Image 1 (spheres, rainbow, N blue to C red):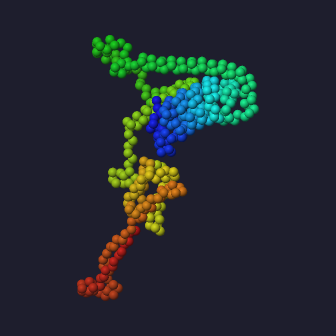
Image 2 (tube, rainbow, N blue to C red):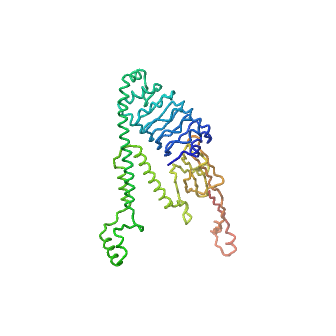
Image 3 (spheres, rainbow, N blue to C red):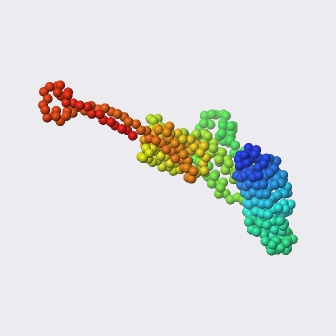
Amino acid sequence: MVHITEDIVRRRAEHNDCEIFSLEEVSLHQQDIERIEHIDRWCRELRILYLQNNLIPRIENLGRLKKLEYLNLALNNIEVIENLEGCESLQKLDLTVNFVGCLSSVESLKHNIHLRELFLVGNPCTEFEGYRQYVVASLPQLKWLDGTEINRSERIRAFQGLEEVKRRVWEQEKDYLRKRAKEKEDTQRKELGGEKEIKERKPGFDGRWYTDINNTIPELEENKENQKSEENTKPAMTNPDLDEEQREREFWNTPCPFTPESRLEAHRHLEEKRKAKDKDKEKKPKAPRTLITADGRVMNVNEPKLDFSLTEDEENNTIVLDLAVYRHMDTSLIDVDVQPTYARLNVKGKIFQIVLPAEVKPDSSTAQRSQTTGHLVLTMPRVEGEIKVTKTVSRPPRACQNRPSSLPEDNKRCFHHHTIIITIL
């Protein structure tokens, strides 16, 4: 069960510098919350409260929010409209897709004189005959019901034959409440039956099933032979993965009524699956990605799956990397590491690494974010240098080539040296 804690509210109050006493709007949707609590004491200045898509079964602990104007409780397990009399400024109430079957409970909203909009779409009470007429007549301050405006003529018609409409609504409400009581009883019986089945199927202390405990004590040799024969007659063990798939298929394909209990059961089933999956992940830690092999070879890696372009600017003698970083991502979530032969970037915990076509100067490299596209442009100057190599070439001049050499000294005088300069860019 998830509780509303001060830490959760503060994390949702970043737009208010994490101050909750002066908070005017807070969103606590999709938190698997099962009870409303503490908000009326911590956030007295609230004007807008989002609690949709949780598991809340009851409206409670909101009476002190005198300034609350909009309350969203859609997609919860609420069955009765109650405990909102203290919300004096309430103007809009959203109860879409809940389980409100007690239509007469809308009369509790008469005290909310500023209420203008009410949403009950997807609730069982909307299927009652005379539903809209009953609500319009019960709440004269209402201007919109289920997204449709209530005009003057509709309000006048709502009061015509109102007593008969109320009688029919109350009868339908009683039928629905009897049906709900039966559904709750069936759910309790199912839960008790499941617990009983688990107890009955509980194995012995060593995990095996026994039919006759006296048969395991005397005559050990005979017992061993019996066990062997039983093992031979047993069918082959089924695959546990297939059994799990079959159970999963049965759970989702078995018809069941849409009730708060079935919705809660589905949520807990998914939660158990998630926990089992997380447990498997903990058991099997993910192997770290190889960035540089054992023999020193640098690998190309693109974990964030970002588009990029790598170009060589011959005019400026640079290598330019244009990485399509998410436009609205904060620059503090990006780390850049330039090495002479490769560039590595950490984008929100994911590694992007690329091998460069030439050696660069890390100290002279620059990184800039585009203000229009958000792209990260990395400019890396290539290494420049001159290596002078002196090479002696033994080649006589033309004058010496036409003259026969008789003396070694003449040959020495006829040779001269050439210097070759090799420039490496």
